[in-house]
Length: 138
Image 1 (cartoon, rainbow, N blue to C red):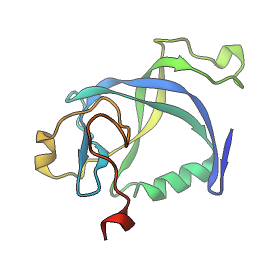
Image 2: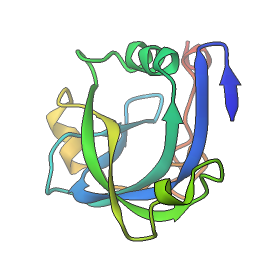
Image 3: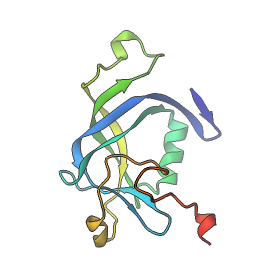
Image 4: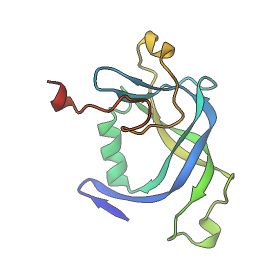
């Protein structure tokens, strides 16, 4: 379990969206944006966490939810599960489908649709678009 000053999170495993979405890297800071355009793009790979209510509220605020990003339930295919604190009945099998909250946006520049679509995001990934913190831009 990871404790933050804003709440608690427990890493559970890795998953992939059942639906395809465009994940683009845009703006001067090379920010990843998951565009809420189901059926377009790629199946997105990401980490699955269990978070408490305090952290969920913090994340909503951090993501500008609901104005900038929207938190919506999405079907996720389990790639691997590491939730060791789960009872055997609570551990989803690989390739099974669960529902998780995902932050995506309907607020984007039209030209972002012309950017490359990524299947996952890593600030140091081979895309060469390293994330730049706001204070490093100014």
